[in-house]
Image 1 (cartoon, rainbow, N blue to C red):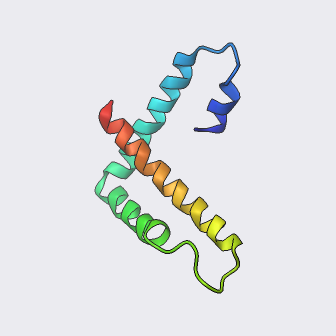
Image 2 (cartoon, rainbow, N blue to C red; image 1 turned 60 degrees about the horizontal axis):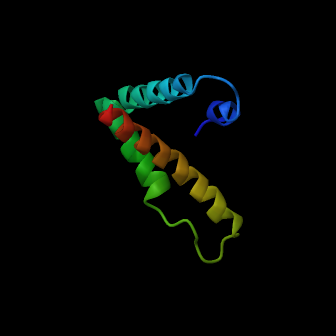
Length: 87
């Protein structure tokens, strides 16, 4: 969920506009990461930020929070790609 969507909660704005913006973002994400180069970039992001341990013995515990934040961004991209493929 984006800040824009969060700010829209409780506002009299039309929910269809928020839904349309969400769909537009999903489609944009698919266009960017659906290309051959986009797939290579997504694979690199997964390798660097998702397929790695988040808590390493001997490191500061705050590192795990930071690493989980990085994972969340990559996972958000993946979810938006899947959403766009269903539209």
